[in-house]
Length: 319
Image (tube, rainbow, N blue to C red; front, side, top):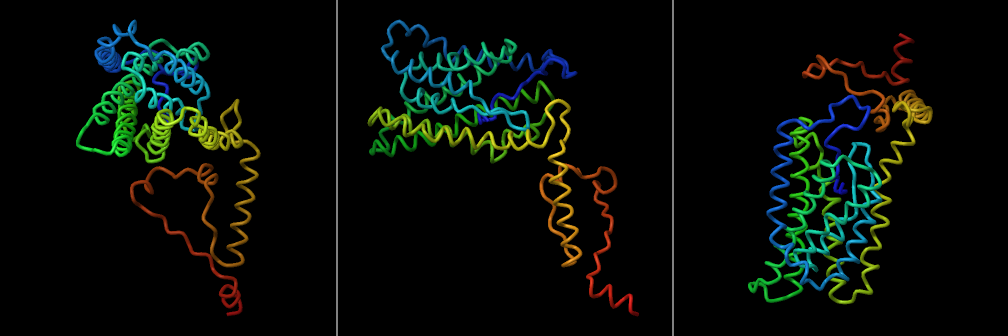
C-alpha cells in the first residue's frame, strides 16, 4: 500500500500451485531495474567515508526499518507500509550516499523476519531506492531554484512534486513487474486506483511534514508522525473485516457472515411486504452472490417481475 500497496508478491508462495520461477520477461525486467538502481547509486557510494550525517541516518533508518515490520495486508493481497514517511524525510535531509542506503536498511529486518526469496526482496529494495534517489534529485533541484524567492513556498512545491514522483515510480515499477511475472494488466493490479494512490500520497506528504519539523524544531517530529498510528489502524480495518467473515483454514465464508447475510435478507423481504420495494443489497451479499457469466454478462437482461403492492394484490383477489 506501501500502503502503498507496494510489496505485492511477484512470485507464488509455497503450496500455492503456481510456478515459483520468474518468467523470462520478468527476469529481464528485474535485471534492468537492478542496473538502473546501480547506475543511480554507485557513483555516490564513494562519499560514505566523508559523510557526517550519520546521526540523522541512524534515527531515520531505525524508524523506517521498524515501520517496515508493521505491514498491513489487504484482502487483495497487497501490503501497505508506513516507512514511506521516513524515506521521503531522509531524501530531503540526507546526502545521496545515505539516501541510497536507506532502502537497504529499511528492508533488512523484514527480510530476516519473513525470509522472502532473494530476488523478491532485492526487487523491493531497488524499487524503493529508485524512488528515493529521484526524490533526492528533484528536492535539491527545486530547493535551489531561484525562480521562487520564498523558501517556504519552494519547500511546499518541492514536497508536492516529490510526493507525486515517488508514488508514480513506486507503483509503475511494481505494476510492470506484476505484468511480466503474472500477466496482470496495470488495471488488474489495482495499483493505480484512487484509494491506493491517495494512501501513499498521504504517507509521502507526512514525510515532507517530518522534514519541515526537522528543520524548525526536531522535538516536534513526534507530533508530526503521531497520525501514523491512526493511519496504520485504519488501513488494517478492511483486513479485520475480511478475517471476521472468512474462515482462516478453508478461505470460505463462516457462520457469522451467513448469519449477517440471512438477517439482511429477512429485512429486505419485510420491506417488500410492507412497502413493495426492497432495500439495496449490502456488500457482503454481493460477495455471496457474484454476478453470473453468460448471456447476461454479454448484455442480455432477464426481465424480473415487479413485486405487487399488498393493496393492489388484495383488489385483484376480490375481482
